[in-house]
Amino acid sequence: MTAEKYAASVAKRVKCSRAKRQEIRQQLLSDFTAAKEQGSTEEEIISQMGDITELAKEFNDTLPKSEHQKYLRDKIIRIAIPVVSVFLVLAFFLYQMIPRTADIEDSRIFQKAKVEAKMKETIKLFNDGDSDALCADTIPQMLPYLSDKAIKKTKAQFTDDWGECLSFGTAYITELIQMRKHLAVGEITVTYENISVTYRLTYDRDMKLAGIYIR
Image 1 (spheres, rainbow, N blue to C red):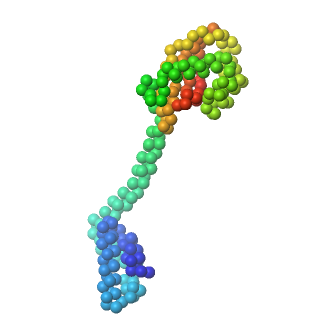
Image 2 (cartoon, rainbow, N blue to C red):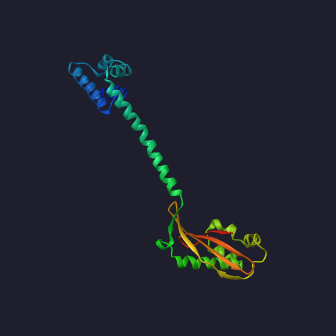
Image 3 (tube, helix red, strand yellow):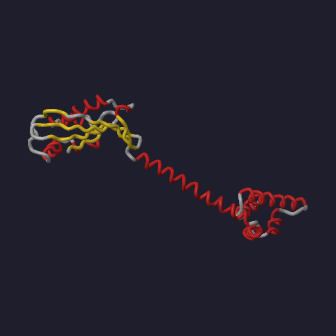
């Protein structure tokens, strides 16, 4: 073992502040230098200084209480920093997961008039049962819910005969932001001959249908 490694190993085991630990290391190296000048080899010096653990214990026993307190403080800080860092990352992640709404008029991605026109276009395709056109203009996750069978099943949950579409109500549209994704979410009530239903339609930033809910 070299003098440098021996001094570092002893200092590492002393429960004190970083500055004091560096001081002890330098003190031991100075002792090595002095002993070498008198003709001793590193092996002989290490043998005279004794076991690393025992020498570190001697330092610990003679250190003032303030140094032990600094050691505990530094240890707590070393433990706390990664814990706090993980907490902050987790908090940021959770914050990003919480959906936030914004006024569609202030959106830099969506235009209210275009979203409303897209909503009416989607509803017309739904009214016509045009599954192919709907599936061509939606995200992949929505495809199972826009098949011919799925559309008929959805309509049948309300009534077997909706009748002709008579009118559209006022469209209420907002921007939804979640995990850095921007969505346009709109609700509109549509009156048919035999029923009135409210559509909630969601579109991604490419104006692809990303959600449909009817009540």
